[in-house]
Image 1: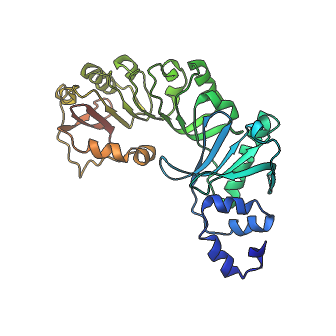
Image 2: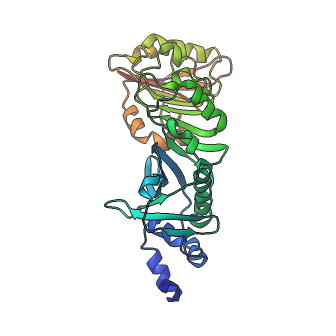
Image 3: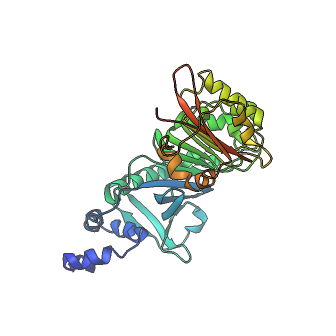
Length: 342
């Protein structure tokens, strides 16, 4: 390649103007170009596998929460491979023959691959991640965003940092199989808008420390009391004031030992200040008793907590058994319970 004949300052200046997807393709060209890309000052970041439709997977970088930059897509629709010119992608871990196209209005490469079987597809996804870790300094712990209809296509790993679950047709048994197979070390996001969400009957997902659940009309008052996680942020239009009062009473009795934050968006006619009125609360001084959210909550819920800053009623509740204190805040349609650092 002619770029390799340029002085080092010239090709370094060229490389810094390339997009991540372009750098990735360049790193596949040879061991020398791989080394060139690897020597760049890449900001360590996380990545995510996105699997939302059959026979296609995306690999994206995540510099900011929920803002993914897809750097490569691969597709295994074999009927589109016939009689076309193919290229060979070869690197330290990868040796793949495929057709390369680009998405419209972007430089994102699409690989059309004639994979022999599912295991070869899983192996490619796994070695691609290894390549990204070594060359682009991507952090090794994987993340997934998927419909569980396609979970068998995921790369080989036992642990995953964050998982985002989309609409699916599978049942709760398959959901539990997923959590048996992949240990979620940080957070689960449910972005399914179906009322019959299979999480409802799952026995495993309660064990995850950080839960973020959109549009969870299937969570009623009795279901809310089952959670024993570290952080729960959810939209729960079926939960009423009496269930929130029961929740606080159970915390006072010593339950929910891991809890740090529960923030829920309720139906607009649920009067959360009524909940606060049921308890003897000390005044809350926001300067002295600062609310310090754990990282996953802080990272993913900035927009939500801007709304929660404007509350009608606030106070501090003390648990007699151990002296632990919690801030309670509420207004119409919103309730926040946060355990303080004593």
